[in-house]
Length: 314
Image 1 (cartoon, rainbow, N blue to C red):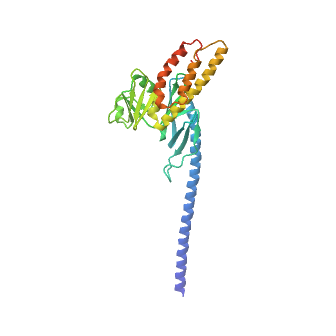
Image 2 (cartoon, rainbow, N blue to C red):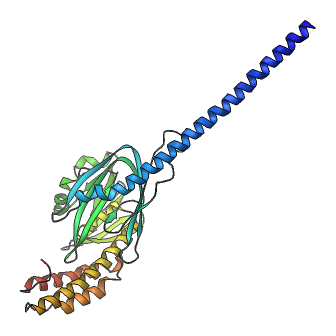
Image 3 (cartoon, rainbow, N blue to C red):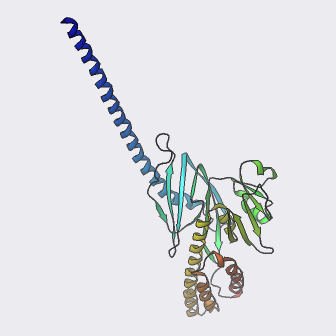
């Protein structure tokens, strides 16, 4: 009888330990799961806040009245920026952010998207890194329309770039123009002609600050600072933002026509009212495929404005 009671105590003892291990494991699992969920919630809120702050971080990096500006945005953790473009009327860029996780899924669901209406952000639809390079150029067509903002985590090698491009990018830290940069793991941008080493090719029109960028099977037309927009951004982002810029160009032309009326009322007559209204009609619903023909039309309009005593823009 004593031996049997000993066996029962041993079985009872083993059962208690087994129950404790199972219960302890369940509690530990729930604790870890709860911590992960709390961590995910905090990170979601943090990613939402980052997306909201990006618009303000970009503000001092806009070109303004200068020929261009450059800066960097640094993150403590690897961060993915998602950029979606919407072309309704003045349109917007919708930005969301997610950070890389050290536990659980590699990339979590991005935070709440922030819609930015008053900026034209050219980038990949998805880009990730700890350091983002921000480059900006003014967009005049022929009057000041807005600033072009280029954002990327990538580094580039410009091969055989013309002098005007070399001047533009002299302040840009992530664009290398030295001969030895081809084999450094950069994105290779070839000007004029391309070989196997080229990730994209820029064809510049002779005697014109315009051309096409050939990349990933797409041909993106550009003029002026839109060259860097075509290099930095995906096709969908580029075409959408160009359409937004052309719409804004047309809306500004409407305001310039009203300005012409006000100037005439103050005995400062201008012969540009009809011209800017025609320009509005050409640009307000235009798309990228009309870009180069519009660029040729903008030259005479700019010259006529310069020849006026009462010009509509400076």
